[in-house]
Image (cartoon, rainbow, N blue to C red):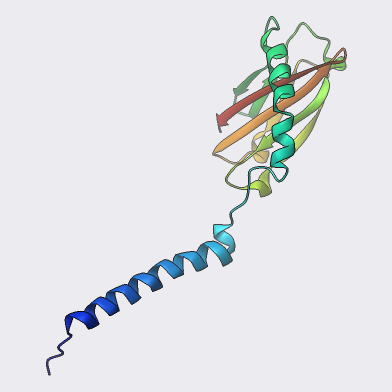
Length: 150
């Protein structure tokens, strides 16, 4: 038996198949948790207003004799603060942000006994991280940002 399809029927079948194909993608992106879409920041507009203050804090850090250094070693990630400051007077927070998965983001308070802090290997997953270090010494705020591949 030969099945014969006329050209108007073929066009209708092709358009219907295309619409089903597109709607399947819309369904996946909207309702399936693996395709979760979200903003980088929940408070986007508030963050935008504070952006100039962040630039000023970053410039203060750049103006130092030496800025913060981040290096990877066998134990994890070592963050080295400038030696010109007494470590006990440095306070603030270190934020690790993973743009691909906000569930593994974490913050570490800065409490130093030496000018180095070690973030152990088990806390960090391989991939790209945005590191933001907000620190304060002698009532002067500093900011250091780096994007790194761990």
